[in-house]
Image 1: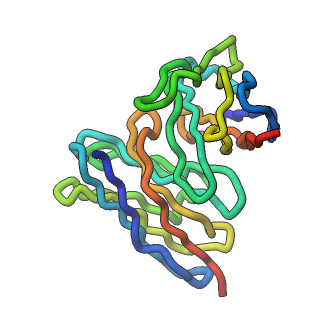
Image 2 (image 1 turned 60 degrees about the vertical axis):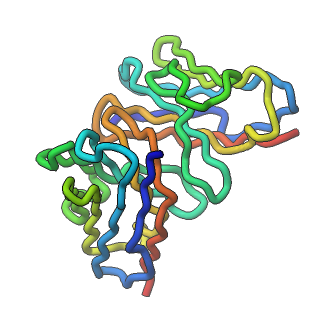
Length: 107
Length: 116
């Protein structure tokens, strides 16, 4: 199975900060990497697909990038509505595997 | 508007069975792979099952293989998850999700509690 190591597991940041969350894949997953945002009591929401593609309706301050086996989600200027848990997902092969999640809190 | 509405959750004893349903609307159901993803209380997301457009191919992780069965009825735009031999570690919110390469739309989730 492909392991997705997500870091950090939690972080606090201030409004307006640039924030980066990273997932490292244990095997080659190409660009089969998605990012999801989950707020308390809500379903996950797709933010990024194909490693770098912004999902419909997602603010442009969110972006995805890849460097080798490292995949990153960046928020260019943090807003209060971005406080949530973020998960990555590899879907190149079954079993699909999620990262452990990153809890983003306001400093 | 894409809508996925799960139902069928509840409290069930260990070793018993439960069947979840997901009613889809707002898109051509038969054109998409569908999946179930679960989340144990205060834990992360875990993929549970995926089914192809026709239902001829199904995929499961080892944690549920042989106990859970995903199925679909394209005429009814409905997805199902038959869960047998339930264990306490199956306690979770179960989400229905649309997606061929990866989930794009998710339902609101349904809670399943396995306890005596």
